[in-house]
Image (cartoon, one colour):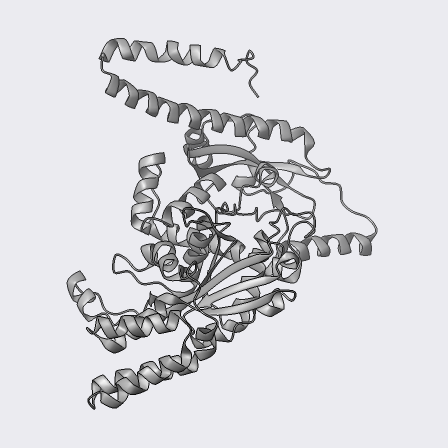
Length: 488
């Protein structure tokens, strides 16, 4: 490790100014100089981070566990927001023969993953607003590292897994910290709205290669329903929702409702909620909700969503806005007997055919949900359609794209988490625990020592060793020079 004179934070700007002033004098152009400063900062960050990693590897050399021996130096490349960094680190072997990259294990650098945590989270958050190809292009413009849109897609799917796992941990009581120790909002009355949004579904089989226009023309579009919900404490003076919590899943109602209760419990204390105002489009899975299990002390009052009631009435009456407005006023006034009588009168005077069938369908809809209509329609609710449009449809129903079920659910989880104001979850290191094969190998080695009662002391320099294991570099060398030594 190189030793240099200490450099304070106040001295760094002076050194950079001395480094940049010759270019400013030579070009005499602020725009060109700013581009030069930006590029030079990227180069400095990459070189500094590379040196940091290698210096830290030198410090870890004196702290390796007993019995480990140095095998070789191996090159590793990671992609950060500062750029692509290639560094050398030591590879050790334990007595059982298992190899360890000690630097990667200590820092949590994932095995066979080039993306660093900062780049991973940036890609996942950017892909929530842009297409995968545009995200890859934006990442290249920011860092200079090329990635494919397939990698962006895998990042989105990988980020959705820990978000869903966090919900299951909250549901099963395995969440980090005790419920009393976590900061949650105490609210006596909560508002919950839920609805479904249909997302285009990718076809399971691949078709022969066609021109793009022909592919778009002949493609059969299918869709699947994402069950979405939003919970909030209420609205302020400007009619804005406060304490918003979003969730969208591609799950059956049996699993959706417990996960929704767990998601709300992350932000609100369910023991303090005594009233739950629910609003939906009165679909089958919405009416048969299971929120009472997640909020056992709360009184759940289910209302009809005004948007869907208005839509059904206007759809039945078509262009007759005067009659539709009269029926809607009866709905809002909760005059159910007069409402049914008016619909029956309209049906009696309607012509047979499509017009009459529309009125009959409206009558069936109102009679099936007459209990919800009697409770009235809360004017401060009915925002679920706008939520679906801005939070989910704005990304998942544009550009003529389609989604697989795992990819669609992962994107919905990411956008719902960002809309709730919560940060994304960084990927966890995968090299903390040994694989099953490595565990069996270590067990066989320990069992052989117990059976024999003795062991052969390790020696170096005797017998045949493969070329890769025989090259041990005592100092850090340039990766290109190391490659020449290795392949010579």
